[in-house]
Length: 339
Image 1 (cartoon, helix red, strand yellow):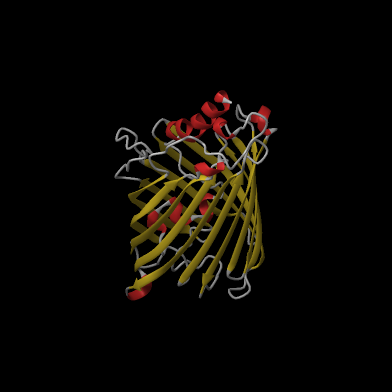
Image 2 (image 1 turned 60 degrees about the vertical axis):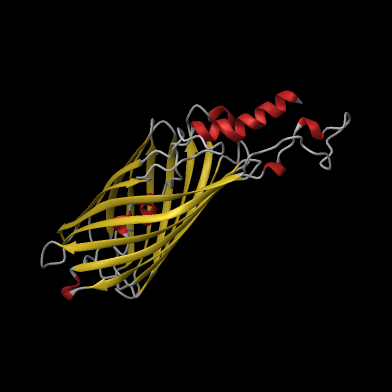
């Protein structure tokens, strides 16, 4: 049982410390705007936006890694001609994994300022900041230790003989970013952005080890909306993230098919394929129904873990609701980075 105990402690403490460069991530990165860039706060066509994201992965290998995210943002203040906007938002994330329910719960407030660069409302730049806090914890009572075996079987009533200094810690967190939007033609739109999360590099250790920090995560992304005809759009996108010695590149294309372009009864569906470098192929589908957007995707894993995962990664769901939204095809007074 000593071997099992050592393995449990390695999984509980060593692996999280080795992977401290890894934040939560979503395959549908365009459908989680406040997690992508604080500068996207309030950057949409409408008055209020609600977003929910859920990701479940590695169920074929171990206890599933489960991630939930919820955000709300709004346009707090608009200046004349809607060219300057102050956005406000909040975002909550919860990530949990493993037998000991090790995970992080975080809450952040976002503020942004969007500046119109021309009088046609076709060129914008936005800057944003995000600040909040997080708690990282685990539940060691859900682990089994050799002291809890009475010689014949496991007895949960026996003490585990362990003394953990602490099972949680909290930290403050600060992030920032910039987002750019340009509508070049009626059927050609560009978006791009840069962001940096955990600018203060908070400590990340159950043992008060000041040398272990949460590295700054750098994000760069871009996409385009290319109208192929009146009812079909091609949307290529790319995301690049780097955190410590870890990096991630996701690239692919969605095709959107518009069924009803009426401003009040807008509806469409989309299909897409993406590739995450050295990790997974992502298949995506989405649907717009008036003010609602629904997204679903699945990651097929082909990394070095595939013998255990059997090429199965995880599914992801997203739901977006925009209040007071008027969908007018190609009329972009206030741009919408969620497609």
